[in-house]
Image (cartoon, rainbow, N blue to C red; front, side, top):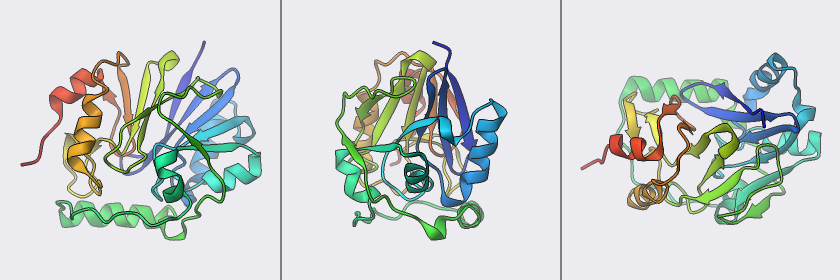
Length: 234
């Protein structure tokens, strides 16, 4: 199977398209203002939003669901999210994690970028399809859902073995949006950091060597390599 991965956005907020002969699967949906970036990325490979067959959310936070409701209605597709985050994606209450470390310049840069990209006008989902860990979805690329609770109760990794790819959402970051620090760490705004680290360790056996976080650049290496570089805050 010929599979191409498109990274849409930037190191502050990224989402991804899995492009196959059978169509496109979106992994997360960015921010509300990312429609032009999505259209441009798909057009560059001869595709359009009409080729999207479904959206898989790594979790239900606002910077990952941005275009999901719009595309769900426009394209008549399903939006899949782990059952633990279904209410979060619909705008339900969520925990308030302990404050993260930050530096003023990177934090302001992240905030301004998010505002420019429509973070202030989040559109929550009105309908989602809850999925459980271990499910392999009948979508282009055959994405497999793997629970990695910690950042949120329903955070998942999405494995696309045919593309040698693993999408981690906010289970990990490779560039902290609040400090600007490059490197592998648990993401800021994580509900349960220790649980998030344990969840990452549960993926250590996976062979995929292209790892995509929701914030920061792609990590080239396996999960075992990523875990060897994971910074543990004291």
